[in-house]
Structure formats: structure tokens, C-alpha cells
Image 1 (cartoon, rainbow, N blue to C red):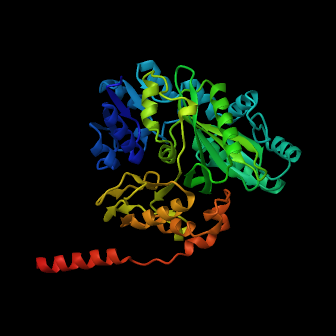
Image 2 (cartoon, one colour; image 1 turned 45 degrees about the horizontal axis):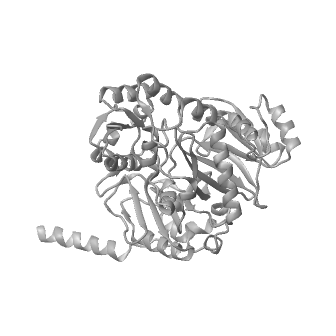
Image 3 (cartoon, one colour; image 1 turned 90 degrees about the vertical axis):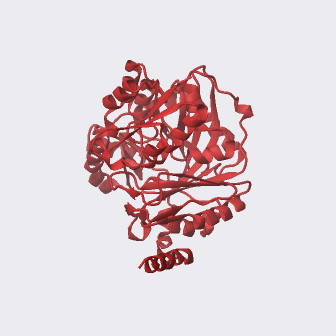
Length: 472
């Protein structure tokens, strides 16, 4: 049993891990930069340590973080997602210093972080992949020749990419010529490796991913799939479990593919196998995320399985407490990423002070947040400030509950994506459960929602004014 876990992250995911530690009777140790001094995860953890004045550098210093884990008596480290969560160096340093890394091995992280290695591993395991190159490109001329052979349109991708970065669609030779150096530069800046490869572009794809859990005793299970097709510029906005676009045979097949993929690389702990589904219903492996996902909450909602708790149990060396046959799904769940962004202004970040915040409630409603009234969202990090997850036994009930919960959510002082999501819920294509990754681009009118101050906000302003007047 672990006694203390260092959480190498911040924000709502750090709060989520603190809660899992509390339920397991494990002490939590948080880290924070000067910009995060008043962050919620700092307040929630048993102990918290400053990692320096730079708002980002401390969270990316693997040696310093592991040294702190050792110095504070932590026997394990949870990386969350983002930052160093898929950095094999962090896993390597943990192993060398005797701190258990709550995630897969250094070797698996390294191999799955390389898109070419991942493709080759999947091909050997008979998991279908998108047609494309099996090595990084050496020149623009090679890219042009391969693209001509595969057929346009193609996707030019960073070999070590992830998170929707380092990806460009090229519809013809001209676009490939214009984008080649651009993607090389993006890959170098974002991932430290100027290597790219190309794949055939799957038109009107559905983005479907499968959550897997694998222990250290050879047991591997999947927790069904999530539909992540509602996204903007390859960044996910809304996630749904299970996908309303799959039938039972497709659901069974993609689950088998995910387990086959995990076994092929000797995977351990929680991970996600991501696929594109084409218009004919065929699945194509895209990548494996070797960490906890932002959208894990929808899977927890339909299965009742605490994924973060299972991560800790697996890292402690315990076998999975259930078989595939024992995992049941019930109903539908949907997660909205509440971002501090202004949809009317090209989704530009809207950082600042939260003047008032209250979370929604009621049956089937869950909020994972890093904000509170009076908290100032710093401009140095991702704009996501909360995740709203709703569950219902039926799809129609889910749509109604989602609308109600979004309207119940109060975030004041900054602009958020909440009104945009309310517009999404009105679109027939979304309500029918038939949409693809082009949904956001296909519905540009959704940002034209009317902005008005709700009655409850006006009431609060009036009450504040009266109180101020009475004070005089």
C-alpha cells in the first residue's frame, strides 16, 4: 500500500487525484508555482511545495519533481495529464530513484509516443491502421511521392506529436509544399523533434477512443468507448460515452482491437487507444495515449469504475478486481470542457478573476473544477477551468439534463464556452447522434448566440449595490 503520493500536476486533475488519495487513505503532496499559490489543488492536498517562480518550468523539471518526492517521503508519483505525463524521462527517473510511477513503463511511453513505432506495433498485432508511411519523411520530395501514391487528401503529422498539435491537412501537392516546413517547425518547437510522416486523410471521420486498464499480472480489460468527434482544431470539446454512433457489433470489435493493442506493447495501468471511424464504419488506429485522459469522467459515469483509484491499485501491484464480463455499461454520459474562452472572439482565452462561481447539482451531474469564487485564472496554462459531466439512462434524457446542468452552472468574471455548448445541444445533427470531427466547422453560426445578463446575475448586482448603499 502506498502511504504518500506526489501529484506532478495542477488544476482540476490534481484535485481529482487528491480526492482519489483521500478515499484510499493515502496522503497527497502537491506542487505549485508562484502563479498557482492560491490554486485549489494546493488547498486540497495534505502538503504542498513551491517549485519556483516560473509558472511553467517547475512543472516540467522531472529531476526536481522526483527529488521532491524522495525528500518528502513519497513512495509514488501520479503525473495526471499534460506536462510530463507522457514523458518517458520522468518514468525513468522515478524508477531509478525508487519512486513508483503511476503509469506505464518508460519503454512503452517512448514507443507509443513515436507514431511510426506505434503504427508498426499495431500492424504486427493485426490492428488496422490508416494507410500511410511506415517511417519519418526525409525530404519534401519523398513526401510528394508518397502522397501521390497514397492519394490526396493526406494528413501531415509530427512523428512525436500529440494533443492535436503538429497536424496539417493537405488537399493537393501545393498545400503539401506549403505545409511541409511549417509542420517541421511546429514539431521541433512542440516536441523537440523535427520528424514528420504522412497518412491518408479519412474524410468525415468519427473520433472514437477506448479506455483500457491493464495490471502487472497480464490482465487487460476495456471500459467501452468514448466519442470525441466534437472538437475544434483537433482539440476535444465534448466527449460522450458510449458513442451513440456505434452498434453492438462495432462496439465489440473496437474493444477487441483496443485490448489487442494493449497486449501487443505489454501495457500496464490506464491508457486510451484512439481510432478514426470512416464513413463505411471501418476503424483505423490513430494513437495510444499512455496516461489518464481528460474525459475519463464519462467512462466512470457509465461503468461505475473509479479509474484513478484503479490506477493507484495497479501501481501497488494489485490485480484488477474484475473481469471483462463483469464490466457493465449503463446509460449515457457526456462531458463538457468548460474553458475560459470567448467563442464569439475565435475562442480566445478569457483569463481573469472569478467574481462568482457555483456548480450545478441534481441527479446525474458531476463537476470537476479548479476554480472558486475569488480565484484568478492565470494566463500561463490551459484555459480549461472545469469539466461538467452529466449522465442519464437514455440519450434523450441526457440531452435534456445536459441543457439544464449547463444553465445551472454559474461562472462570472470571465467568458466561457457554456453558451456555445447550449447552442450545440440544439443542433439536429448532434441531437440525432450523427456527427463527425467537422461538426464545429460545419456550424459556424453557433457562435452567434445572444448574450444577456441572466436575472439571477442582475439580482446579485442590485443586492450588492443596495448593500454598499446601506453601508454608507
